[in-house]
Structures are given as structure tokens and as C-alpha cells.
Length: 442
Picture (tube, rainbow, N blue to C red):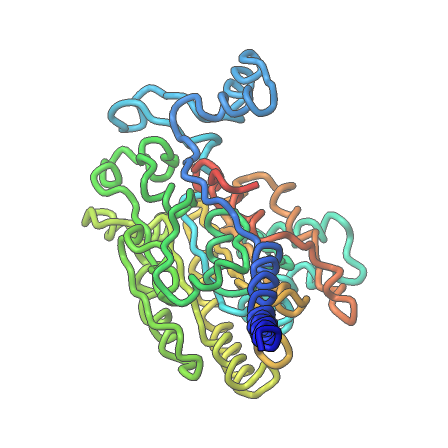
């Protein structure tokens, strides 16, 4: 009897062990998978400095440049991290930029959610296509070289400089993670996807935060430094309209904010209609486009306008990229973008304004995104500078147009356009606006 009881006890023990072993192995496997696949990253609390001498200190510590070499760069105008005397109607000291001189008076960023590269290249003829085809039109048969160059320069002066890029996103190709990358220059991970469902404000260094916090006297631009004093009383502001994901990420940074709800994928028009309603009003108050009458009222101007259209993404989720609804939505975007770019083309010759039309990610043939396929990662980026940005440099005026003349369009069209990573746009935005590059940007 004792032997039988012991045998039964051993049997029960092994049965219990057998029952507990699968959950234990599953937990261990899940932990190993999570640790190895869902990569984690450390958030940086540091901020890039805009203090006087900050760029020189960075060059000496990171690149080993001598103080003499740094001073030479300052004398040549390559660095602007030093105090200037109070002239040009400015009280106290100032500088033209935190690290390098500010290059543009203002900037408008037009995000078309899920703007796949082929959408930008083939389906926006009024806004993007017409500006890319100018180079093609200038290649007339039988034209002499001098006439050819003169024609290109005239077209450039009338409509500024443009270039279309393949804009490569890093997985995960989800809007919130892409916006984090586009503003901080860092690489969000799959583990961050939980933040896509609201409430995940950015606590790292970004050009949005820098633009809000860097004192205006550290990043002044010649046009804005007019001696009338208006801009000294009301420094330029930041405006936003569109997808409310931006407000989740930056809840306090926008001075004029109009967010619209983004999670109802069957709502194709609410966010876009909001952008179409507010964007013309915001553009009228943009630095470089503001009329003399508006300046005399001493009303605030905008040095940055962000507009995030969402309809293309929602059409993709609901109907797919090849449905007639997509053609209709892309046409609506084309007209709106053409109006905005046209306003920038008409900017005064002494102002420089840049427009960036970009997609945060692409979409698959069934309209989804989030992974790392080429359709999801290859978005479009269209950069357009107003005619005043190049000044009288005729050679510079034709450089961008020379890159693509439209003749490459065909089966291998993607090869005709340069490819850049999304996080590499971050330092460009920062330096154009006279800001330091965000600390987390590799």
C-alpha cells in the first residue's frame, strides 16, 4: 500500500509538471522574442545647445578642430555661433543662427499621409508634375546652348527651384513613429507602436521644440530684422492644422493649432476639409508672404506652417490604392498643393520660402502599412524654393532643375530620382531655420 501511494504521488507530480511546462516554456520564449525582436531604445534628455560658441565647441570636441580653425570658419561666415553688435534695428546682441546662418525666411510643411512615391511622381500633375516638366520643356530640338540656358533661368525665376526625391521611411511605417523620426531624427522601434494610440508626447530634442524655445534674437533672418520693429514686438509663431497626432506629440508647441480626429479610417474628408479651410488664412500671415497692410497692423506672423492631410491614407485603408476614390482624392490634393506652391512662387523677390511636400510612409497594394516592404517604405518628398532663394546666382538657379528633366519617366522612372532617408531631412530643416540639429539625430 505504501509503495502504491508513493507511485501515485510521483504520477501526480509529473502530471502537474507536464501541465506547467508548456506555459513556462511559452513565457521564456516570449521573453526572449520580445527582448531580441522588439528592440528598445534609450530616450535622450540632452538638448542641442544654441549658446554662443556651441557649434565651435562641438567641432573641437567631436572633430578635433583647433580654435584657430573654428575662428577661421566664423570669419568666413560658415559658422554663426557668435554675438553680433546690436544693429539693423535690433536691441542688444543677436546672431543669424544657432550654428550656421539661417537660410530661409519661413517654411511650410505639407504632409500628405501615405503619399507613396509613385503617387507624387505620376498623380499630382498640377503641383509636382508641372514643376518637374519644366526641365523637359526646356530641351527643345534645335535650340542653341545659350538660348537653352536662358530659357531655363527664366523659368526658374518665375517658379523657383524644385526637386522630387524618394523619401525612404524606416519601419515601423506607422504615422506616429514616422513623425517622431521626422522631428527628432531618431529611429523609433516596434515597441513604440503602443504609443500610436494616443497620449505619447515627445520628450526628446526636436526641431519643433527648438523652434519654440530658442530665443528669437539667436536665429534672426535679414528679412525679419527690418527696422520697423514690428517683428521685434511679435516674434513669428508656429501654426498647425490637420491630423491630431501632431498635437499628441507636441501638445504645447503650436501657437495656432487646429487638430482634427484621425482614427476613423472611413472618414475620408474631415481632416482634409479642415486643412483646406485654414491653410489659405495661415499662408496670408506667413513671413515673406505677409502684405505691407498686414505688417502695419503688427499682427503675428508664422515662420512655420504644418498641414497634415489624411484622406489619401484613409482611402487606401478603405478602398485600396487603385480605386476611383483614390484618383478623386489625389486630384483634390493636387489642386490644394498647386495653390500653395503658387502662392510661394509669387513671394517677393527679397524673401526666401521653402515648401516641403512629403509622405510619412507609403502603402501596400491592399492599402495597408506598418511593415518594411518597398511599397510601405518609399514615400515621396518634393522640395520647392521660392524664386528669391537663389538671389542672382544664375548657376545655382539651374542646378536643381538640371537634376531631372522629365525624360527619365518610364518603366525605370524610380532610378531617375535621388533617394534619401527620412531622418536625414531633420538636419536640413533645422539648419534652414537657423536651429541646432536635434541631439538624437545620428
